[in-house]
Length: 89
Image: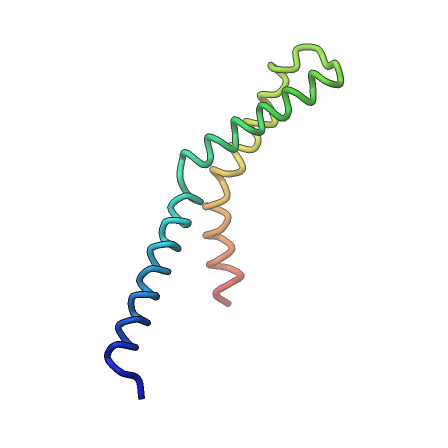
């Protein structure tokens, strides 16, 4: 039989885990994370386009970064559709 001390310890572990999971979820949905990913996508595309000698690589790097941004902004909409039509069946 579990003692009150055991239950208290388990409860504290669960609360600690919940705080960690909430923090990770907040990061996953944050604007900061999305902005960093767009920036890194832009930089990676720009350096790649520059390396293969495309004219105006930094201007052309805007398109992949913008496409990535659009995809991250539209995914919540598609997730809701998926949840309501496929997952909940």
